[in-house]
Length: 181
Image 1 (cartoon, one colour):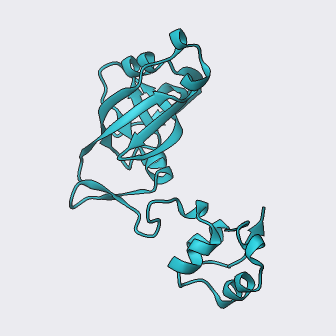
Image 2: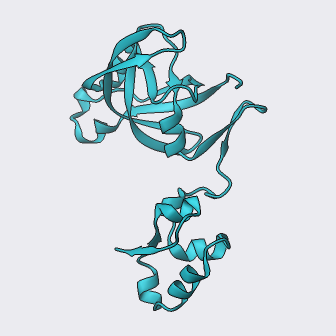
């Protein structure tokens, strides 16, 4: 897969709750898109500027086959091209390149295009995460839903329709059923 970088904005998610003098910086940097990495990984100097706290330790296997133990820091809010998520960050040694791994990419609903070497939004999501869309938008956009779901949705009142959401099963194409809030 092609290697490329994207600009990311990273901030300490806890900044909004901390006194001003204890807040970390908001950082804009280039990160290597790495689908082989699991998490967001940041060098120690960026972790210090963000003022992230240690959440634990993790043993990892790097691309060169070596095994290391790194600190898990959190919680970082990362933004890529207008989409953001909150994730734990693995602290890398000083001087390492920031890595944007599979979990933050998936949570922000990005796919990697190896040919164009860019991030591509998932076409089905149309800017919103699929699990967060109300059923009414699914009915308008996703015509693959089973007839059971259509009958169930059409048979509900307008008031109760607003509180119906798809379950993850709808996204994978397995069974169709709804849950109520």
